[in-house]
Length: 432
Ligand code: KE4
Image (cartoon, rainbow, N blue to C red):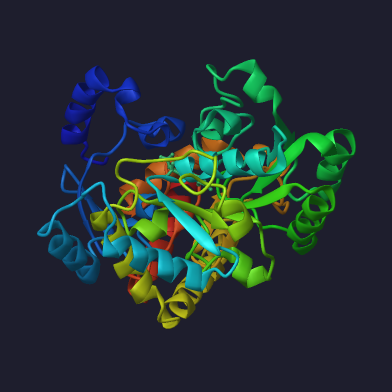
């Protein structure tokens, strides 16, 4: 039995201070049927909770820690910058450095604006799309998540899927009505919406690889189809690359599939573990943003030197493409060996993997998982049962079936080995 006394003691206090004891719902561990861990420290691919339990970490702070925790060069950049001041509310050289690194890596981002979260980036991108087109409606996909901006909390993924809150309360009906929902990987569902509402649609926002209903890969024709459909109807195509940005390659998933969206949102990795988001795209759109244009968007800590330095240090390390090859090898080995473990245990499962991102779905029948309906058929109770046992074995997956596991550059083959063995022991114990 996992020793969790200290975590439980702290959680009791936290519940008196914060709703559900957390500052973000998915951390509550509710969907995996246990009280949450309090993490005390982390280094490389390991996290350590307040009860001195050690885990191989596949959460990676939900994606930002692609280099692993406390990377020496990132920590050094943060310390050196902090010694000169953390935020001035004025221009600083660090914001130019990070903006230059990102726009050089993602050519469709001719101009970029830094914000403090993926949510802010997505909210700003649709505001800009609405201003540029003079239209109000947006199209999103069931199971995709773009942060907690009102327009996105309609059939969203991530914590909303985890907690079965298809749409959040508190969102004015007028706003929800302007959010049209299509089916991921189903181009026909988008064509039908455009046939009815095309002239009123400002933008389509999509996760080019869906990471908030578990990992669901795009069919090739899906993204290319969205590009053509939005261009034909004068709507803005927004790739939400908050997860995939600098995760799948040095740049965006868009580089990988050679599709240029009109706007891109980023977050997570570009902050190197500190709060950073960004949106950017064609000059024609971005020059509408204040103070140049009439689309207002602002932020006290946007572009602060500390977060910029952490992000720039991270991207400069990732410029060495060997890291992406290494992540692909680690992902391939983990996926292949887990497939064998599940087959030996005679269990239905589906492992969706792309590079260093993966999700294990516990399905009731042997099926591929390529859309939201198939995701909904997975057994998240069984995921919870598996999760708790795996934690006992020292492996820390995302505490939700509808999230993505992340391998970092700090995971060695020895860690993959230990992970596979932990899965095998877990399945053995669950099958007893
Ligand atoms: P943030 O506001 O959390 O920085 O980013 C929102 C966001 C936007 N777009 C995508 C594709 C995202 O995945 C996210 C946030 N991801 C979740 C986990 N899947 C963050 C974890 C949490 O909510 O605590």
